[in-house]
Length: 218
Image (cartoon, rainbow, N blue to C red):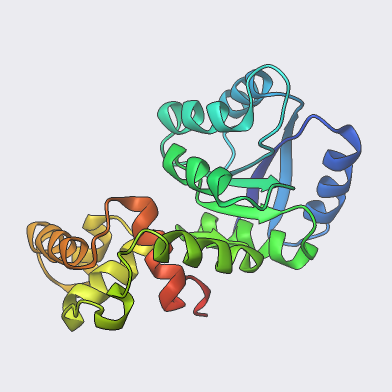
């Protein structure tokens, strides 16, 4: 039997943590191994419990979720982080993605979205709440010059493949292994595609992935 996913919950509301714990512990493939009420405590708990996934709220006293996410990724690069928040503003989403979060789920969404996010990020993927899709798409389109969407630059099939795998969370090494090409070739394809599409970094690639529907492919 496969081992369960080890989940750490970081939220300053005890009633929220209790509800999430009941939901998670009721799943056959995951369990809560620690709880924290603020960012500092989350760092301590992460060090002690060695979770696979950390579920973290943005708004916490002391060290907030954004700072905690950035610090946790520096200390434990392999841990996957899901931001669970009431904020449906894409500025929060963008900052969390830049800090290293792999998932973003709204507290007002169905519990199934939350559980799906945990499983996706634990498998190395990226998961954004479907309710955020329009925000993410609008954010990318708003930065394009007027009329530019009518003549969208074309990228090659291989460039598209590399960009799609990057958007859903794969590293250059994983993409190289999957496509049976060198890491250097992956880097070249990615750089060419980003230049053609006017993408500046990881957040833009994820935004583009949302526009293409890549993050919600099953």
